[in-house]
Image 1 (cartoon, rainbow, N blue to C red):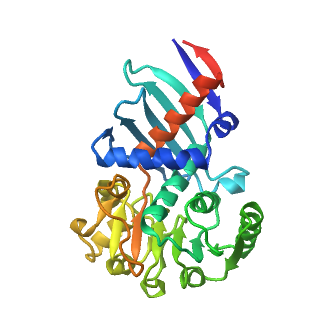
Image 2: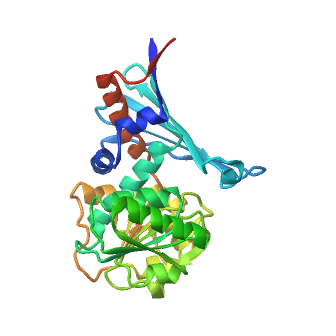
Length: 328
C-alpha cells in the first residue's frame, strides 16, 4: 500500500477558485438530496494558548474517497511570524478504509472552499446587479471571499473595514491591484455596511458588529466568522428582520453561528430558518424572489465542502502524477 503526499504548493497548482465553486455547489446540492454522510463537527479549544481546532469529515455518495480535515490556528500566530490558520486533510479509500492521500495544504483548502461557499451564497441570494460590496474584516479569508465573489457578481466598488486602519488600507491596495476593481478602506463597520448590496463578514468577533438599522432592503449578508458558539458578527435583530435566513447546515448553525445567537435570544426559532444552502443549490427551494428582500446566509463550514475539494485535488494529482508516494 502506498499513500500520496501533496505539499501546499502542489495543492495550489491543482485547484483554485474556478474549480472550487462548482465542486462546492455540487456538494451542497448532494447533501440536500441525502447523498452524503456527514458526522458532527469536533471543536477543540486550547485555553492556555488560545489555539482552536476544528475537525470535519464527510463522504459524498459514490465517491472513491472519504475525508477527515483538521483545521487549526491561533490569532496570536502573526506575533510568532506564522499565519493564523493551518490544516491538513486526510483522504481515505471509501471501499477499503485505508489511507489514500495526505494533503499538507496548511489551511489553503479550507480558505478556498470557504470562499467558494460565500460565492455560492451570494450567487443564490444576492441581487443580480450589485453596485457595492461591504466587507467587514481584512484578513486572509476576506481576500478569498472577495476573489470568489467576483466570480459570480461584478460590483463597481468594494468598501472594507478592518480594526487596523493600516491593514485595511493595505487590503484595499492589494485587492484593487489584483482584481482591477475600486476598493476603499472604511473607517467604521457602519460605513462598510450602509448602502452595500452585499455584505460579507469575516472576523473572529465575539460581539455583534453589524446592526440591523444599517441594513437596507435588498441587501444580502454572508456571515462567515462565527464558527464557534462564542463568536458572533451580526446583531440578532439582523436575522429577525431578514426575509430569508439560510443555513449552510441547520443543525450546526443551531449549535454555533449567527442562528445560534438569534435562537438563544428568542428572536428566531429553528423553523424560521428558510432553507439550507444546499436546498437552494439543488433547486428544492427558491433563492431570492424579490429585489427588496433582505437575505442572510450563516456559514459555519460543512464537511462536504472539504470532501469535494479534496476529491478534486487527489483525482487531479493521480492523473498528472503529482506528489510523492509513501510506501507502507
